[in-house]
Length: 71
Image (cartoon, rainbow, N blue to C red):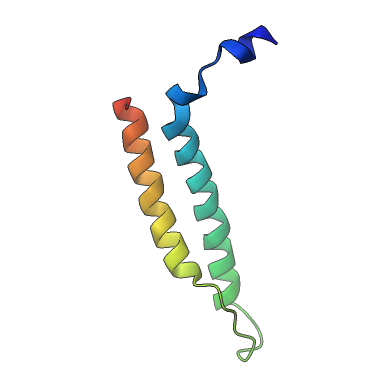
């Protein structure tokens, strides 16, 4: 358990942020695909899945760049 205490999470915050936003990209892409392939055209949703996907891709790229830079 002492290796966990020695691990400094602040050194890896951008990498963790990049992985989390990549998961959001995956979920929102699947939800957007499901929305486009719906059977009943009248069953509309209220979530802007395309915008969520775009902004989370931007967050993924930005946080990955900062993780690589080592900020």
